[in-house]
Image 1 (cartoon, protein in one colour):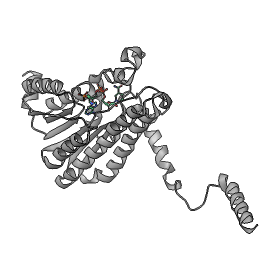
Image 2 (spheres, rainbow, N blue to C red):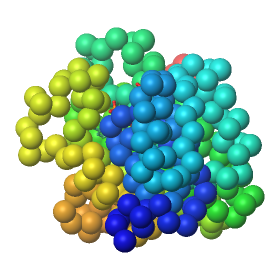
Image 3 (cartoon, rainbow, N blue to C red):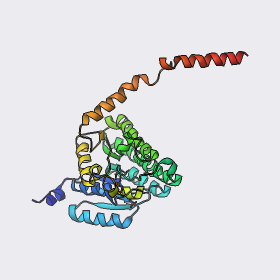
Image 4 (tube, helix red, strand yellow):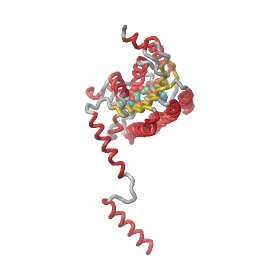
Length: 286
Ligand code: NAP
């Protein structure tokens, strides 16, 4: 039996809706998820590319693959995809992958492009998640995979609003795991490093201009991310050699918890706070 026959006979796992499926990381996920037994709904703007991919995947895997052309920064299109996520009970996985980057510094960037990036990376991702999650909870299961970026942990790289948008994705994923994990919803945030796709050219620096030793193929990225998903990871950083580095970082963050909100200022600020209070009282009395 060939590996293709095995893929075709894989049992159904429900439907995965993938945003940004027309190329790059999303297109590789589409192929891998179809071979794992998912039917697919492929979302992006470029209908021709989506249809070509859908046709190939139906032929090669025998799964049902539907194309939903949508610009997720356009309100009407976004609402259409939200409605699909709310109403289609076969959907068992939402892959929030569509995203835009920016390589120029904030001062050198176009505010309208930053706005569009935030609409796609943050607003659309949030609304799609909000649309699908209640159904997952009601049905007792489902999976959310959110594609973030290592810049979430490295705000000094690239554009601050891009890294901020990806830090949002990490925070939201951690919060959703906390909120929905016990309700059967599996959450994963994937933090790719530089990956060989059109993303870089669109963001302003062709990927060929990067040192090639920091660039991973989209295939390796997705296969590692899916291995992390299978292992039940909440945060997957495919490039990081030692996962203990991440665990130590996260443990340090969590150790801050009990001290982040208190009724009195920290001792190092106490003198300044007292001095300000005294000055205010003196000014009021005068
Ligand atoms: P890509 O090759 O440029 O693909 C982006 C995908 O998003 C395409 O399918 C594109 O399709 C879709 N898309 C863009 N704007 C859209 C919109 N307004 N509405 C709907 N779909 C839209 O980039 P990629 O590298 O695969 O990126 C995928 C994700 O990985 C992004 O979230 C990105 O931030 C993240 N990431 C990438 C890298 C990297 O180095 N490549 C590193 C870290 C994180 P259409 O043009 O057809 O709409």
